[in-house]
Amino acid sequence: MSVGIKDVARVAAVSPATVSRVLSGRSVDPAMKERVLAAVKSTGYRPNLAARRLRSKHSNTIALIVADIRNPFFTAVSRTVEDIAYARGQRVILCNTDEDPAKEAMYLQLMQEERVTGVILAPTRQGVDRTAKATLDFPVVLIDRAAPGSTHDRVVLDNGAMAAMLVEHLHEQGHRRIAGLFGAASSTGMERRAGFEQAAAALGMEAEALSVAHGPGEAERRVTELLGRADPPSALIASNGVMLMAVMRAVHETGRSVPRDVALAGFDNDDWMELVGGGITVIAQPVEEIGRTAMAMLVDRIAHPQAAARKVVLAGKLITRGSSAAPLLRSRKQA
Image (tube, rainbow, N blue to C red; front, side, top):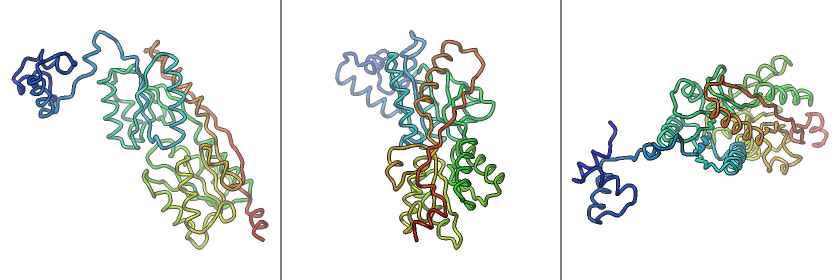
């Protein structure tokens, strides 16, 4: 049951108008103000920010809700969105869900109260379907993750094709036994896993795909298990930059190195990836283009709310570096 200003007024023994004056920061008798604030705290009242903006259709604020702000991919996209919003005279609210569906739902509800102009959302796996069915007061553009037939505009990477490109590259390098680690909490991880499996099957490779739960230490644990086998894979693929770093850490913690003992490739092109050994082979995502496209789609959706939902699929770029060296070349370096 929601708590309103009248409830606060009753507990504080004042009029609703007095409560409004206190909450809006206007001058009120100190003792009365203290009673009102105590009543707000005891009732758990939360001001409806949307009600304060009834004279305006929106707040000229864009919300950006991402899955993991530690991931440099989302950091880069956020920077692009903020730059464009600032140039347009708009504010940006940045929210981080930690791949938690409950946290995501809470932020979407908060955006309703904030009466935002629109939302750019990287949804959790569960949130992809839930958002498609939700009735929201603002337009939504999905980035990085989207379900087929989504009712929202979305801009995504061609995940399956890009994962297949990495597999094909490793095959060309001579690898025949590979393993891939994919985020279990996102539709992106599922799409990349599917591309990985399909490409490996088509090439006749022995491949193992692992779904990794979101959380510290999960990727390291799975890599340690893989490399501890009697006949471990000769190459690993990680489905995002955060996981790629975790994989690299686990390889070193087991006393092995890249690419001498195991080859490595993955997604995202963070700065550190150029500095490790001969560099890490990656699919570089067009992060700035993703951010620009999402903002353009949101602006267009605000102007044309009845238009059909659109999907923009972007391609990444394979950047080949020393981490994916051929097994024969690696054995020669060891000799």
